[in-house]
Length: 417
Image (cartoon, rainbow, N blue to C red):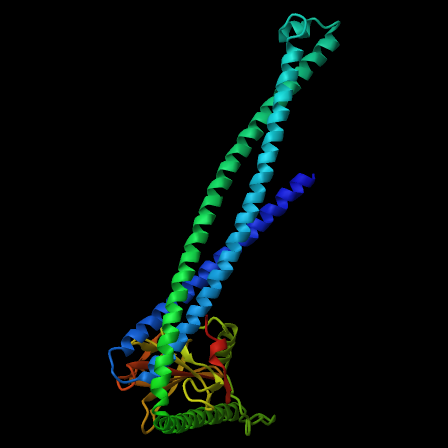
């Protein structure tokens, strides 16, 4: 009983670590795709002599991804070591069990031989030499049981031998996989050290023009603040327009009725129709699963107050997130909805606002727009081409924001990872 419980625990442990290895492989695959995108973006910056700032941002991102990948490899190696130990222990237990079965089998064979060759040295004579029929039948059943037990032991030995062969093959494969992971970790570590040296050079280069970059940053922040204000005004105006339309509809519906209708004056939320409530509910239900607003790209600017990527003692307050993509990338809607506004401000590219019930998504820094106000869009529908800044290392970056009514949300927590 204790032996069976031990085997059950080992099988459970091996299955659990097998699940972990599968999850690690999925994480590695996804991170590999992100690293390839970052590598492609870095190669694009090399085509331009300008844009050291963007090169530094991308190099830092590549270093973070490399460190995360090494951590995944370390975890994978730990899991593989655990699997190797479990397989070795299980195999040793099975070898002991095999020796025990062979010994039991040998005893069983000797006993069968001895019983079947007593007196006349034949099974037949051993049975018919009984004193009476009852004794003869008991002898027959006894020999039959011995023979059946011998066959069962032989089958168990055969099955256990096959299991040991499979365990040895799995052990060899696991050891080979561990060696591959260790070699991959070593190569990634060398690449990481090279990138850290490159980052140091880039930082030294930027420090020489710190005053110029600080002035540039202030100008950029002022432009972003202007854009954020315009977006907020547009959403406020859409809420007011929609509330007025809902109020008029209620007023028209209540004509001739003695019950006064309740107005929506002063509300900060959208007045939703049944269809809009359904869209809003579906949007909310997909939190954490919405597709990214680009087919391929990495987040280079996170939501909220963040330290500046290369200026000391400078912080930036992002109302949305920044996603860098390869040149030529098109922005796409993250969910079905209605385009409520297409606009631009002086010194900036175009922006698109799409409403999903009482949620709104904003896509900024577009050079070409494929939709207009009033258009219904579907999830993943392309809505415009993202601007590529040839003066800053061919930087192709989408500014993406998310609102619920008038409140701004962190879009990163809503997108699929």
